Image (cartoon, rainbow, N blue to C red; front, top):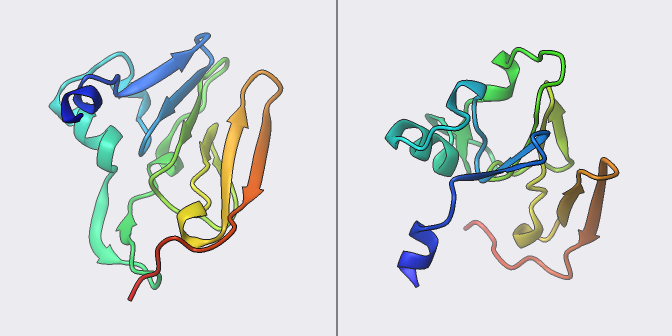
Length: 126
């Protein structure tokens, strides 16, 4: 089972317009798969501190993104937001389904977010 996950792509580019990845990706990392890219895509960048909800505090890499004409949208998770986080053509869609909030998906064909409320919290921080 582990080899299955290890052989999955680090990110997916859809129609040259949308990049889908776990924790995000910087533009300079696109079309690379080296160790630095792998680490960022899987884990993001942390400050070493924790949020009030108990999550590792993440660096908001979307703030420094320079949006250019015809840029690709980046859809990512890993960082939990109460609502979809949109910044500089990046969409943070982890809205805490496992914590009892909602599951969010993005349909790039019609540029729409789809959300379903969780039936319960499946994980609670202690």
